[in-house]
Image (cartoon, rainbow, N blue to C red; front, side):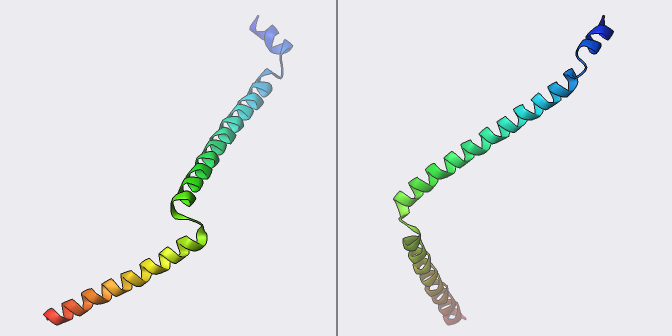
Length: 82
């Protein structure tokens, strides 16, 4: 009986392999779309909170200047203690 079903459906394994590949691709595509959606939501939230790129660049420059001033202040204090 098994032999007859193999003769009737010779491409069954090929079709099932193709279907498995399609399902795997669909799942992968869905996951990427979910991640893209999450990223866009985070970007919108982040932009609303911190502003556009130019204002973020300005904040970064300000931070770097303050950090250098702070590190310089620490170096001066350490040298003063020595």
